[in-house]
Length: 193
Image (tube, rainbow, N blue to C red; front, side):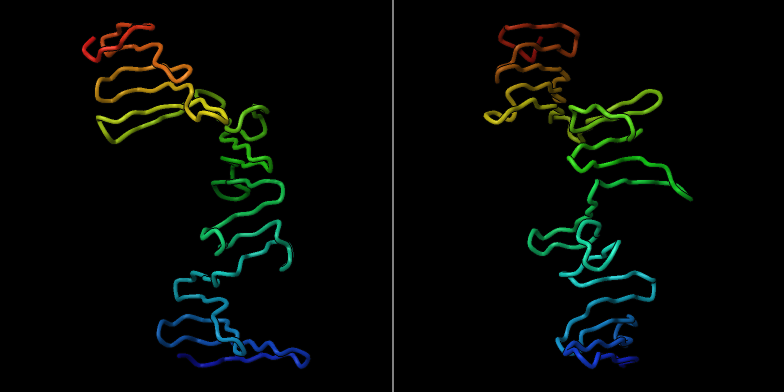
């Protein structure tokens, strides 16, 4: 195992902590001595690991509203910000590239301006685009419009096998723009144009 460098046990507590160097992998560890388990480890590259029931808290140890951690109940990592999360790139103060507001809205680009009735807003000072790219030449790229009864009652989709754009409303194909530019509305659609 390792060599205990320092052991601490408060007089009025049954909890016992130990700092040690793990000789097997050269990690510096913080352990619970009274209930064996690694609480924190730092490896020689400076990577920090915490156990699966812990999280980093940003204001105080008990503040669950601003944290990064792992939730073993849902088996996943989490970022938590009480009033939303900001994602920045660059040096110094950085430049905000994306924000998730506390109501779930996602704003990419200029995060101070957003469509209040939209879950996703993409904004920039010049041209803005959204790309749906498939690595398959036989699949589809699509946008669904749905409700509580039907998740794709309306759909715009592009078929990569015939390079045609299709428009569906009320779960039915209503219009097709074929690869040769021919437009078909409310007719039986043939991929042969």
